[in-house]
Image: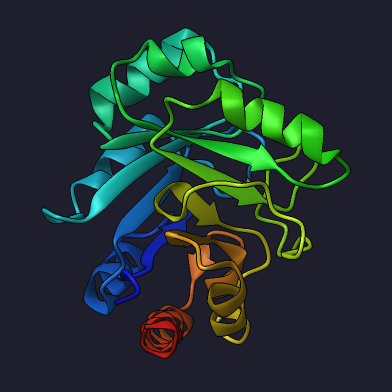
Length: 214
């Protein structure tokens, strides 16, 4: 039987959106700590949202080329289950915090050899998040990349992101068969403002795709 596709919703900024994700059965919630992002949170906001998240729903803190002091502060005040690094961080940098981590891999405007070299460097990562942004970009743009050109990653480590929405998620899962999917703008009314209806539709479509792929 095809394993269940896990779902992460990223870029939450409101308690009601966290609650909507929990009600819908989302597996993980992403909190963004990147100053130039429209979904950026202060440490206090992140800690307040973290308090809304029950047991067995993972909390992921997203950072991009952070100062070590920022990582330490996020770990201390927000206490995420996982860290997600979205910049040019080395594997040594990502590993030093003794916390499982995800590494975002930029897929736009890059040779496959370059992508594969970065993936090999981050062998210790718990998951590799393939996103549509170019190197140095933030993601969350609502753009897809070419799903026909994917690096060789075991399904359980492959997290698909970039331009996913309720109306294309079944096709994405059928073609890519990722272990998990990660959405932000695809379930939003506006940057950082999620739509409970879109979140519910998304979860329903993922579960239907899992049944079709079984």
